[in-house]
Image (cartoon, rainbow, N blue to C red; front, side):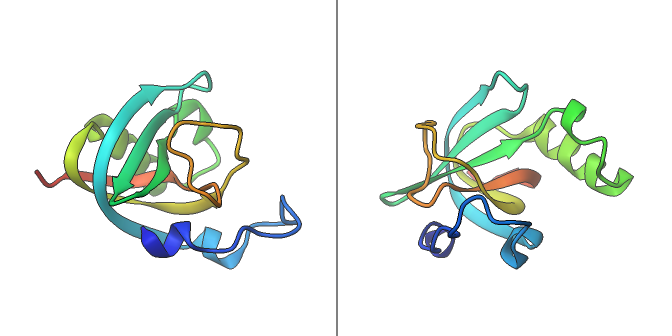
Length: 122
């Protein structure tokens, strides 16, 4: 997680296309301190480790129609089990979002979105 939140924010933003690091899957171990539904029906998770925080999102099935069946299943399975817990492994794709004051936003506004895997380890 420390490596992701320390990455420089792309300039200009938004970038003209997806960056190579936004096409990779990352695994983060952190506390999940918030799980709430957003207006777009995604579930917003706040990941915390030491003084760092970042967001992970499990997308609504309405937002996954362009994904392969395999990835849609991963997203759906992760969404079913994602929850608040003191130590979790969260697997997802890196994504630079806009910083609009959302709870748990990283300094560079990087997120794991979509979440493809979730396991509570505590």
